[in-house]
Image (tube, rainbow over all chains, first blue to last red; front, side, top):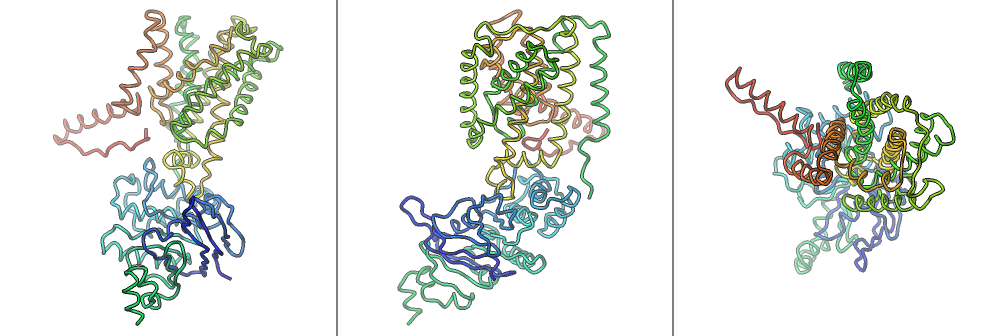
Amino acid sequence: MALLAARGLTRRFGGLTALDRVDLTLGEGEILGVIGPNGAGKTTLFSLIGGSIQPSAGEILLDGRPVTGLAAHRRVRAGIVRTHQIVRPFANLTIFENVMVAAIHAHRRTTGHARDRVAEVLELVGLADRPERYPGALTLAGRKRLELARALSTGPRVLLLDEVVAGVNPAEALAFAQLIRRIRDERGVSVILTEHVMPAVMSLSDRIMVLEYGKRIAEGTPAEIVADPRVIAAYLGSEAGQGAAS
Amino acid sequence: MTPPPLLPRRMAGAFALGCAVLAVLPALDLSPYAHNQLTLSYVMIAGALAWNWMGGFVGQVSFGHAAMFGVGAFVAGRLMLDGLPAPLCWLAGGAVAGLFTLPVHPTLRLRGPYFSIATIGIGEVSRVVFTYWEGFTGGATGLSLPVTAVQKYQLYWWALALAAMVALASIVIRRSSFGLRLLAIKADVDAAADVGISAALYQDVMFALSGAVIGVSGGIFASYFVFIEPGDMFGFDRSIAFVLMAVIGGVGTSLGPALGAVVFVVLRTQLLASYPELHLGLYGVLVIVIILFQPLGITGLLGSLARALARRMQRRIFGRPRRTPPPAPGEA
């Protein structure tokens, strides 16, 4: 059984259908890439799975149990955590406290244990030196690492990464890709990620889903996706797609 | 890794010593004027700190805390007229004031200025309703409470005990993981939800606790003034006073509002005596100056003074300025 499944997920904003009957499955320990042009519905999909907005139709199952009606904070406790494209650190808390505040909630253990977990997570993402600083002192890449650390410390089973590599330099992007793979390998966390940086998605994902205008237009391994004429059409225009198909 | 203690031993020692000194002060031939100013300050310290739990810790600035102040005062007053012992009446007043926040909990879904505006409405509605509810509050004629001169003198210690408890609670909340969650909610409600924190729950709890403490301080205040009247107890001035005390002392710091409360009480007495029309104007100017130049109020001012002094000492000893990190927002 899939760890996470969505069936017929639909979300309308007024007259605009941002997401139209999208099905999705995510296996245990799998990395699923979601790609698509701007406005394809990637972030809407994440918001629906994360619970910050509710679907107009369709349902979301975690371990076969519906989580559709749950508020965002309850989904976090169920094991679904998201990061944002535009990072939102708690500016009034130190780096350590930012991660700490996420750790204490998901695990109802004593504070002492939570602190150890935080130190561990900070070590993993590479923010272990000077955790007493405030997020304002970090570079963008550093703040993205913080966002990742904060999500990780809640002890997620499904991690939703919204453009975690976007806006950082190529060396950092490579480091992020390695980090995400380590998170999957060492912690057994399943990942759904959206990304505009194609090499990152292609090398990281076990499977890729392509969205266009809120619809799922293709799904498969990275190799299948780059050869799919519908995908090429969506990205480069229909003539290019036909060219590739012929 | 061991967490830092909620109340470090040195802090607890200093706190206990401070309370002990204040508790024996009346034995040292304290003038009635000083006795009065201190008692009032304690009541206001409790109120300002409790307001700060909402306005400073959770970041929801209330302009309607007079509602809970008044409810606490009149519930306590009524029960005292029924002959119940005063401390019991104050606690009951606090409990009712805490419950009073629950029906207005939908306003907590509003953020920033929208919440503040809604609380103005709550304060004003309460004032009008309780003024017309003559059977309970005595209407515009108010209530006279059965408080003897001796009891009134003893209120010094009751008010001190309340202020000490609320101050202690403020320190512990601010340093606990519970306080950390409150600060996260203050920083970003949505991001807090993304890490599993239910902002709604914490805001409800803090609003009720804050209201309850304000209610108790309202009860003690009522006993001290013996005569209470809804137009005054529920007045907008009272709501503003809590905001002013916290802003003057330092919004969001654990004990800043206590400093603000002392300054407020003393200033108010001085100004009311000499320039009765001027005092609100002066507060206005004070708040503008604080918000422009020192958002953390007196606490922030003391902090920068301490840093400047440390730099100067350093320069004198080592001959070179030390780079100090900028103070973090919201940090005392």
